[in-house]
Length: 140
Length: 157
Image (cartoon, each protein chain N blue to C red):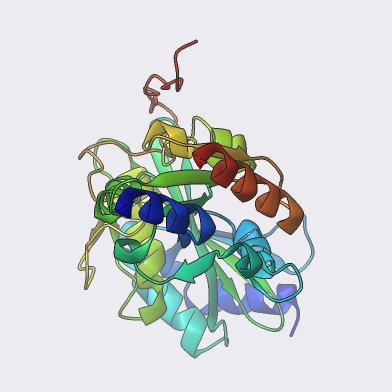
């Protein structure tokens, strides 16, 4: 019973952490646009949280820079289980133009296990909503 | 005051401190070559007497046996490129922070990227490269090779 309640609340109201691992800020602006009243991610119960300890889903933007690698892993470890990672934008998926550069590790999947990829440069807020809803549906 | 006047002044007043000064092909651009010991006096002269108060950037150049360091000084009238050669076996340059305090960021970047040793720099910490960057690796040197780590493919092939 309690488990069902926990599962229901997780699917109906996931809390997200917005994590920039070295992005150019374009994806970040689109994520904020998706959270604002016009696109309104909150109608799916999605709330932005300021700390990884409250979050269920990490929304990552940008390639992982070498300086950021250990910090990203540390933030991932602070998120309570079960946790999900969404890679947002072309850089987060593969590293894009920064792939193979000496100061970049490539995409998020080089450092963290990723549950959903959302393509775009930058992503549209619609794409972000679509990706997050698909992730939530896969949990049901 | 145009580029020719400035060149005349430089040649007249600090002739003994420079190796060579010339107007370059581009308009309003002067090239001055200096020795390591004379860099600070020349920059101080340009700043105090001729009004070249803006240091645009310091660029490094890997010429093989030598490194060339170029100080881009600008005023409203012209731009002076102060060039300094330093041998690869002994890559020392003097700090210009006594004349231009803001140059410290450029000098720390030169230390990171080219491995030049800036003498008398007030704060020699690394600036741009990651904290765990191995010592003795300088990415902008021409003979530097990057060993790219193998990529992880999630879920296999």
